[in-house]
Amino acid sequence: MNADTPPNNGRRSDASAQPRNWLQPFLLLSLQQWQSHGYELMQRLSVFGFEALDPGSVYRTLRQLERDGLVSSDWDTNSSNGPARRVYSLTASGETYLQGWASALRGYQSMLDSFFKSYPTDAGDHHRDQ
Image (cartoon, rainbow, N blue to C red; front, side, top):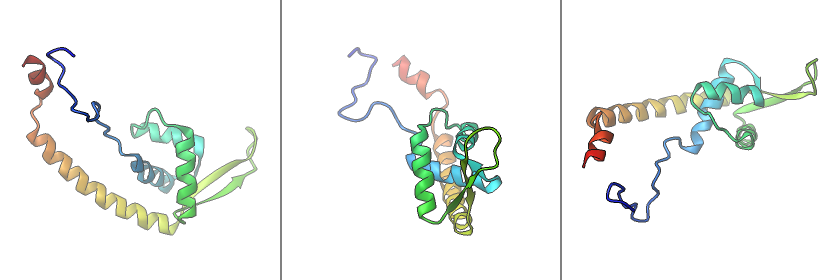
């Protein structure tokens, strides 16, 4: 380890800024706008910054949301572009759950705004100069 590299003291050296369960509200928001199949949802999620998603994680989350009654699904057999696909829709319970998430995310946004008001914009440069 060189002098410029701080020790990690047994802690994780990289910060994970995208909590795993944040996938839920973004899926629900996407479904609020339009019913979709899994692949299309993954494309929509990339717009929100979910770039390297494991398709298995998305489908597992969708199945859990369906078990929880927050989304429903039906098979679309009318597609001339290939095999039948499962199309997901937001339920009334999912809409209520999404409203709760939106409220919580507003709180996080306020917290993050406070964090970045206090965090110096040149902190990364300052750390490297020491």
